[in-house]
Length: 248
Ligand SMILES: [Zn+2]
Image 1 (cartoon, protein in one colour):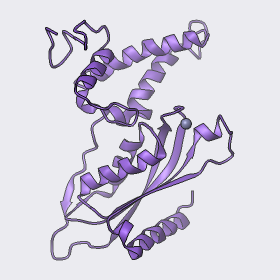
Image 2 (cartoon, protein in one colour):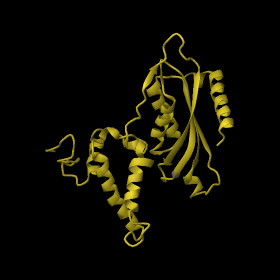
Image 3 (cartoon, rainbow, N blue to C red):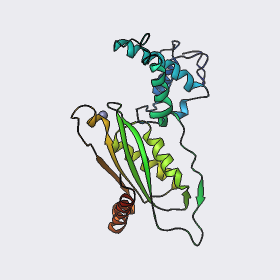
Image 4 (spheres, rainbow, N blue to C red):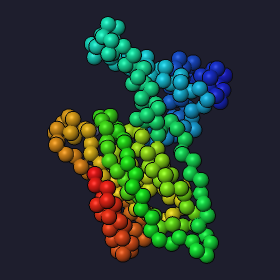
């Protein structure tokens, strides 16, 4: 176990002390040593230094080329499959799983502690695109995020940015609702909050049971949203009003 550097760019020593040929292998070893969980829905941005993403995209391109070869797709003469491996690698890192590799969106706080502070409920509708971690099929839906404002507020668009950052990973809808609740609590300090998600699932519609509709709802309620019937009812009434105004 010699020659280990913190950046890992020069000497990449893995668990066994051997040089890792791939940056991805080096990072996996490092996260294991750190007991850092790196499931499909986890953010690992703290491990990505300047330039790492480009190298990981190169490595994933190579791996996707192997997958296409194993699927017996002629990526050399089929013009539509030429470059597909790189397109897939870039799409995973920058788009459909971008929330794993990018740090949390900057959510500037505004104080909400003056005499005329806002004490009501705030309900924001956020459109989501996600991907199930079982089949890597699309999950399309909308999250309604409700809070009773605490000592600080964030800009309205930040709720959606945070929700999308959580969604752009491999997720389960149940996990996603928890993740959004946790990150909204972290950003706003609000202890009273609710997250309601309605989404359709490609893994039920495009394969398997080939369901015509796979609409699924999940709810996470905390604080007054959970314990106070009036607050809970107000949250769901707000959602109904939003749905009437902007039907899916
Ligand atoms: Zn699935």
